Image (cartoon, rainbow, N blue to C red; front, side):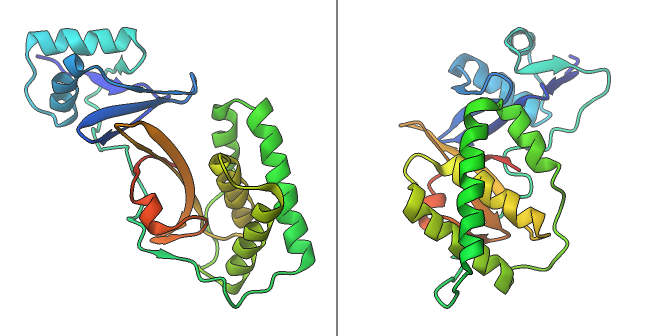
Length: 222
């Protein structure tokens, strides 16, 4: 049977604890794929033969906005962690002393992104970060270490609890403005469900501990 299905452009997914978890960017929500759809989704994803019943499941996922029909056979490369590296180290900022201006800029970036989180849709936030461009400098650098430490000091002023996305998007935006490589990674875990966001430069975590990050499966990399 034809498998001319593709993920909807607003959907990202990962598999955590055997459960397919989806992020709908436009709806700004996470949800788990019902178990009755899991086999059909896995078989379609792997390019395996699918039964008529599984085709019906995929058709229902179209109505739910998870999949869409496509004229061409799509690439089924896993979009869970494109560009994400397994985190193994944290950036050492112990010998760094950022300027007062750098700290003020970090606090300003945090406040700006706190405002954007309240007033911008997630889709607009992601589009803004993606528009800041790619790295132009090899990293990590002394400049990056100073920026990261400035954000650590900003955390002491503004707090960090339950603000992982605000902190991460702000840090990525500042790094990219200086031509530094940094990626925001959104990850999830299943049973119990939880979501987290952090920043990586390759295998180096910039604003979190690697062992904490490894509890989550990347669902989106920005």
